[in-house]
Image 1 (cartoon, rainbow, N blue to C red):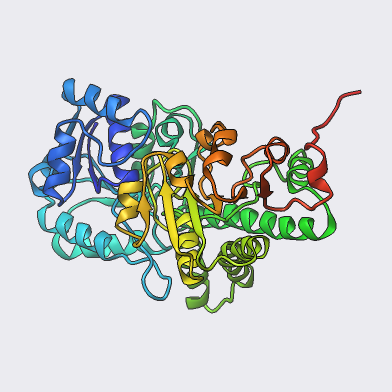
Image 2 (spheres, rainbow, N blue to C red; image 1 turned 135 degrees about the vertical axis):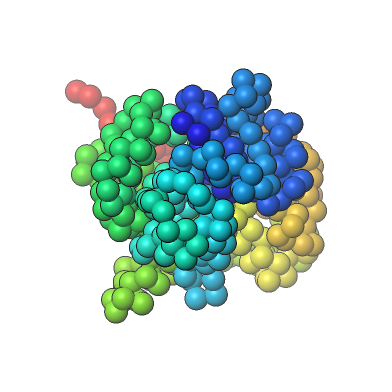
Length: 443
């Protein structure tokens, strides 16, 4: 099929490239000329494992193209995906100005039957809004459907090919059948719903996962007070098939381009429809407080952090991505600065260039040992695997004081304590730190 994807961020570029890879002819559209020129050379503007090789492969076989002009490709398009950003506005609502702009562009240039699919995360009712905008200009047959994305940054290419489900919200059988044809080569359950249910599924899914994260962080904070170990608690909980073990890792809380804005947006949607979503308000509050709570722990251990030198390992909101949007690491840096830390040296294997545009008065260095030299403490703010494999004996030699705040619970606390480190973890009481975490034993 001939497909256009408007927007080349994490969702649009991965979706467009993968759709080309399964055999469709895809044109990705973006107004950023420099970005388009870069992608035409098979260079990805984002870090996503496997994406650049896939771009190169499909450009070479003439299935993947990039342009700044939607009007040039719309006449040949059978299915058009809207995958532009929907950031939060000042009130927490999803800002739909980019979706609206694309809808106007489609309406002004459309001259044939087409299926328009909202891939961006949008509030319930957005499909009807897009349809009404297009209808102002074009009175022929078309349909607007909902096809929310469930791609995880860092594993987005894998997720496209191995989805838990493909959700399609449509008003007609033709619209549903067209989208089923688009995703026919993809294995996995296809869920066809009403448009409104499809739009809600995305928000409800992200809000529930965010709730699990805030819940386990609350449990972690109690574990510290009663001498329990959050890793043992989460492991035992996760064996219950009704709960599952995913999103039960205690730490600095959630971040990124989806969870924060989607949770705020769903809370706002509830409010505008006359319902106070008390649980989500608490989820947001817990997530915000978690960063402050851990910095306060570091202050107590160090006897204050004013005038201290701190190394921050990790800037991306999660590992395997260069995305720093709503990153807990950046919140930590701002909290440290607000408490009078004298110097912050930061390292991340992928996200430093993006972080430089978001935080200031930070020394960005290309080596973690350099970042830790002379430091009073190291903070693990992103769960990059490489951090657990560092030479921590060497790290201790270059640090001024041997303190570590493991904000992601990825380090071996017992091994570090033998090296002479004081390691502050999340959700581990003093008694729990004396023995390694146990797992189930079959008898």
